[in-house]
Image 1 (cartoon, rainbow, N blue to C red):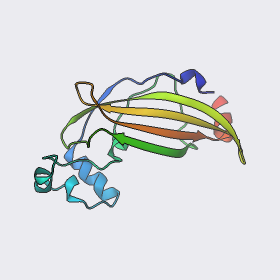
Image 2 (cartoon, one colour; image 1 turned 90 degrees about the horizontal axis):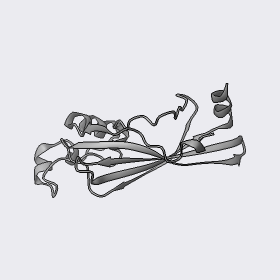
Image 3 (spheres, rainbow, N blue to C red; image 1 turned 120 degrees about the vertical axis):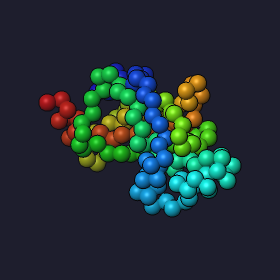
Image 4 (cartoon, one colour; image 1 turned 90 degrees about the vertical axis):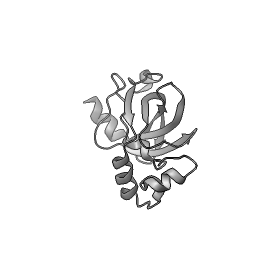
Length: 149
């Protein structure tokens, strides 16, 4: 069902690691570490700046992968793994995009399950990768059948 999308990439989108968004995100996840929001703590850190929490890239825009249409309901978030070359610095510009890495199916107790693997990238403006994120989306048989209708 999704194998024809393997290898397709989204368009690249510019994102900014905004101070207020980082602070709100840290509050939302219940992480009070001042490295995320206190400017003096950031200046005194080894990064000389505030940084974003490790899962902050979830809020970025990664563009659209042409013709990949997923339903807005019924998907299961299977797993997500982040890999960093360095932390995200508050105020910096990040160029983000995603690529369909794989799709496979397995038989489960609730029917056939589809596993869509999408890898997302965050680069600096010169093209150096700062982070990657690999997520697996589980698509139940019921959702797949509803998509065909």
